[in-house]
Image 1 (tube, rainbow, N blue to C red):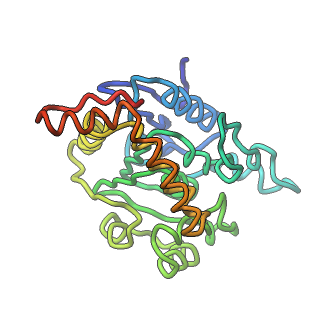
Image 2 (image 1 turned 60 degrees about the vertical axis):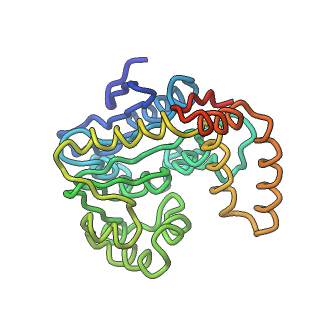
Length: 272
């Protein structure tokens, strides 16, 4: 598939999806959303891909929704359907994880948001539904909605407090302040801050390590446990863990996990 507003590359079992409107700070459009969705689905279905990176070209990650689009809809009486429609997700996935942007939680492979420069509005929200948020030293974050007459969009009020805590979430949402990379790290909004020089290369190295050294099946099951667990009580989470433990003992990856440790060699996980 050819793309107009993103690029898609696969190397060393890592798919890198790059938002590619650098002249607009990668402002989000409907076309970009369609292409990102298609690329993530392609990576998810590709057995040669074990980790996915989402990043932006040029000087920023994503400046939020395209201002021309926002200007056009500001005079419309009701929201366009494109802003409300859920995503068609295959398989046994609960309805919560079919919602727009939140569907990333259902992708069975780790998604890493590699954030440099501005991550604003929708560009702030989308990384929240990724498994890792890694920032460059020049990354900047802002919810921005309270300064645009908008609200906590696309589940922001649910996901953000779970990542940074209630107090930090309230401050970020109410004030629309700009948080730099170090403040984002302190809050837990990101897990790592890396030097600007060779930033994407460093993130790709992290992704390659995931792809080479851990079981894809383990990551797939753990991801489902973690995000489903946010909607479960302890007993339900415990029951799911027991069920998955029993299933794991008969897998190729479990046998390989024991064998490579005993034989002191590099693992060769199949994902099965």
